[in-house]
Image (tube, rainbow, N blue to C red):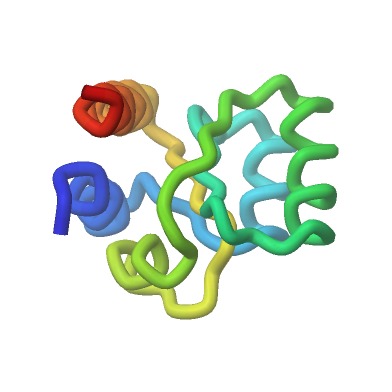
Length: 106
């Protein structure tokens, strides 16, 4: 398991992770979400539904990983949307994703 997935698991344990489309939409509308993580294999309909709210609320988002591995890290099987509610966790996770992507490019 890589660092990004560990941070997602840690966010879950700290109570700073919301999973699922409807719960994430509700949290975004209440301005509680600092970052939305969408798996790269999310369905077209699922992506459209969540992207509408992301644009309306101007919430930062990132496409990362596969649904199965993100669900496993979060301890929530079958989920496709992962929302971080703590700004420090969000910043750390984004930095780690960037580090991983830079390593892949080298």
